[in-house]
Length: 73
Image 1: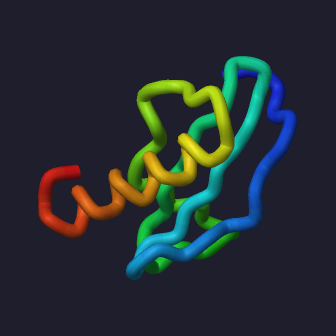
Image 2: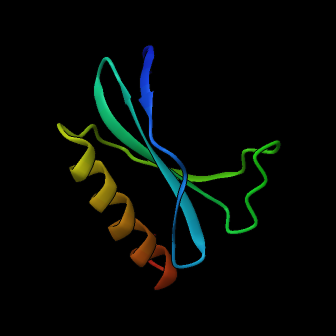
């Protein structure tokens, strides 16, 4: 995925945690298991596309979490 240039602090939305990461390809997000343990790094989903801005990736992660909560993610 390229060299990581920036990682935002892990944020919580509903019962999920996610982070937004920038590398040389753009911004993407990672959604973690609600029982996330940093030592285990239990990733549920990672974005399939790259975003131009941190805000776009952030709101895409929230939208994806909403889909997960409705059984559609």
